[in-house]
Image: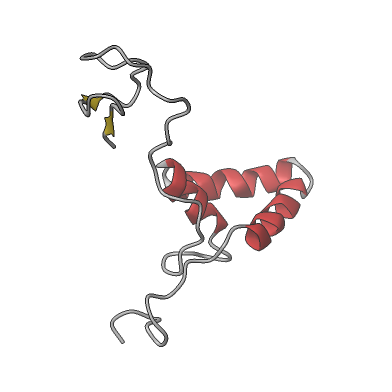
Length: 105
């Protein structure tokens, strides 16, 4: 992701606080690069919560799923309640147009 100075239009590094050309302060906070938190339709196992968290943060989906299962047993089901809340709270990915799911059919 590339940020630009609002005063001179020079390209800035994502972590820059000041412009290297004109010295103007970069507005804070900068948008965080990455995908939005959306439950995808393809590739999910149960509700798509682990896949959504993995894709939004750039993590390995298998590791997130394993940590979720281990956390479920270690926390006496508290992770299961959090999973259900995330299943309800995280929006589902919309189809590009009606009748497009599954793709290629």
